[in-house]
Image (cartoon, rainbow, N blue to C red; front, side, top):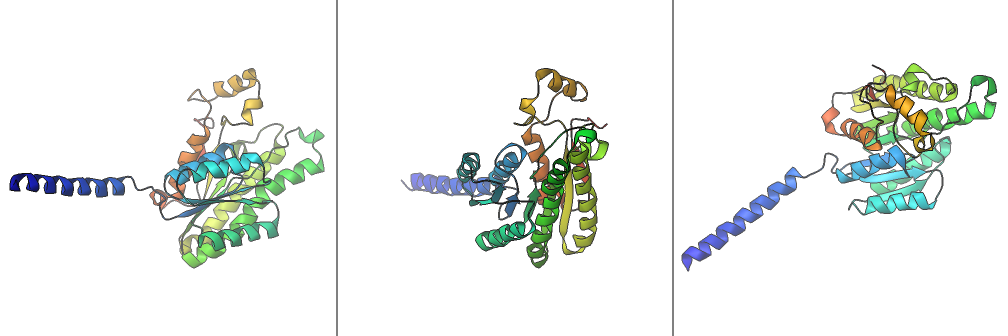
Length: 274
């Protein structure tokens, strides 16, 4: 009997030890952090929010409208066992962006990661482009980055830490016919981010850019197979990227794995610009 009791006790201790170590090994890269992702009801933004949640971050997401797609995204993230809240926001509006940041800080007490992902396209050749098509793309894609970055820097300065990730594009580097407004907005994000990285680096706030290439999302699904195959034919890896490919890079930039990386552009394009 004493031998059996000893064996049971030893097994119990061993089981407890394994559980403790298993928990520590599976602790996420973003555990204890709060991340805000703009334009995250679908596509790349949603993929980033889901991956961040799986890595332990509490999640705040924004969308221009309180629609079913947005509510479904919030419910899906909530199912991953983290705190999550959705905020209806016009990212192109300065005051509204400040309101969202204030509400996020009030609800979550801090912002550790900001992902500037909100964006639109209004593609056409310059000779046919209207002023509205130009202004709307610049406002949503570029001014929104200014709006949210400026607002988020305040709590990050108090924390003396933070990671700001802004979504550019390969066409912000290379340009693309029929996308002069989109390319200009994405190029502006790069210059803006490099400048801000130099301003706030001494406060341990990092600012980086992801430049996706041809990513298979709801937007690209509307393209014909011939057009998609033409794009894929130009890519050394011979495939379109996935939202998860971009999300994995965002995770690296959001986490302490990139603690010495700031002011950089990471191309997620399968070698398209090589």
